[in-house]
Amino acid sequence: MIQTAGVALSGALAIWFGILVFRTASMMRSAMALLASMAALGLLFLMLEAEFLGVLQLMMMATEMAVMAIFMVMYMMDPGGLGAMDMSHQKRSALTVAGVSGGVAALLAFVVDWGPIVDDAPEPGVQLYDLGIEIMERSMIIFETAGITILTAMIAATMVAIARRE
Image (cartoon, rainbow, N blue to C red):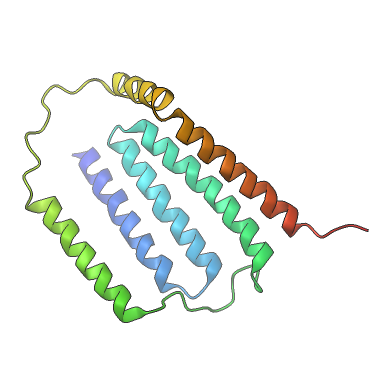
């Protein structure tokens, strides 16, 4: 019962903070709402015993916020991000796409027969081990390439942001 309430609460928090991303008029507040939404999603993964995904979600969002802060300072006229701004562009088409996407997601979640629930699932440790083997075998080159690309972008953004010293 407690886990179900925790899952529902973290899911509701993720949705609420996701809405706040677009409802605030401040870049910094939008970024913090995004961080809170993604942290709630990471917590949701942890409660569902998907430890790898939960920790990965939290680590990726911390890194993403660091990169976002670098780019905010580098490119924005208001580095603190507390000035007013409008985060909603093309409101009618955005609402249409959101409504259709939400309807399709609800239809998939509640109408489609997803098959029987697994009665005998492996322990979380075994699942994590199997996931690690999958990542280290077939998907390793993808993760290595993505990591080097992100690191290169962070270094380049930092170098561009730092003023040249004469």
